[in-house]
Amino acid sequence: MAKTYVEVLLGASSFLEAAGKEGYAIEYLFLARKNWDKTQWLMHMREDISLEDEAVIETDLRSLLENIPPQYLLGYEYFFEHCFKVTEDTLIPRPETEELVGLCLAMNDRVSKKVVDIGTGTGAIAVSLKLNRPEWQVTAVDISEGALEIAEENAANLHAQISFKQSDVLSAISEKQDIIISNPPYISQSEWDLMDESVRTYEPKSALFAENEGLAIYQKIALESRDLLQPDGMIFLEIGFRQGRKVQKMFQQAFPNKKVTVHQDMSGNDRMIVVA
Image (tube, rainbow, N blue to C red; front, side, top):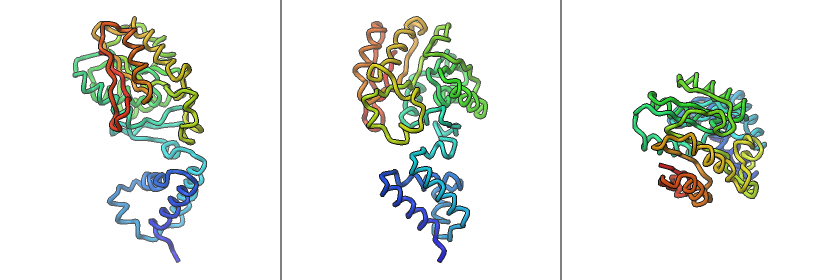
């Protein structure tokens, strides 16, 4: 007897959960592949599944059991309502980073500004800022050549005029900036075991981990931005939820005349630092 879409996906979801994986991932992946929204899913879920679709689910199920993130299987992720190509050269953009972009936009108007995004990855931060503030001159830097290629492709696809440079933190930047923004690597080696298996296995280590208990890149940013931030410039940083006070102290020492504040994400965790 033929199975329905909902029967096959429920079975696949239960199979994932029994293996200690995220059950919803298979439905998320399948609906994205079919380009079905929730309404279309409700319309089709009780229909008999085609052999082709069942085969797609089987293949994706095997990949999810190997901890490959759904975004890498699809090749894209949405960020600030735009579609960004992702590969294993780039970190998968996350909702917390959308909050960082939102905070930066809320605190800055449309006046022309020079902005640099450190460790751009997919280009999600830089592109989102440029699309929302076309007057800004945005430069995006990354140490990874592979990441920069993807970021440039994303910027071109979304028609965002951005300057890209290969750079270790701010080493390739010579002009003073009005805004320095970054979601740098901030996970310490001691937190390795807490990481999701898919993150540990597939996402680029250089975009995740930092020496000195995850603080090494912040120290570099604090040091290098002193000479490159305009007197009335601002810095926006994403941080690990345990790093608020340490990073705040570090930037307060680097910028004694500025106010350094810690901001929480929607879950109530320390997630952002603003130097203003």
